[in-house]
Amino acid sequence: MKLKEYRDLSVDDLKKQLEETHQELFNLRFRLATKQLVNHRELRRVKRNIARLETLLKEKELGIR
Image 1: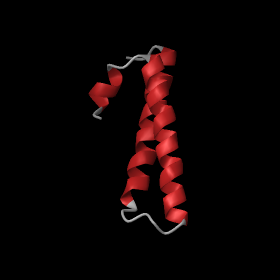
Image 2: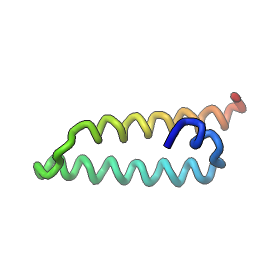
Image 3: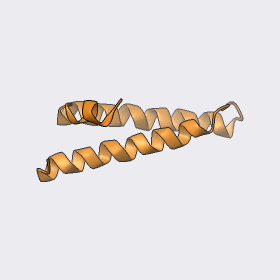
Image 4: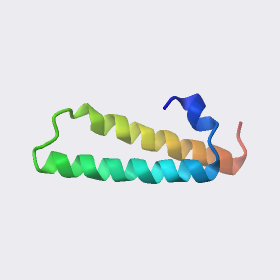
């Protein structure tokens, strides 16, 4: 998703998306540990999405933007 699409979501939707992204990160780490992960860049992409979602949640909590 693009940043604009994330900004249009409600707080509950952002929290749900964050939870799903954490689950995806867990699965990727598990696949990495068992040597089944082919593309290591997926880990970086998911971590950045988590940071983006947490930042947006914090912005909404503080009333920024």
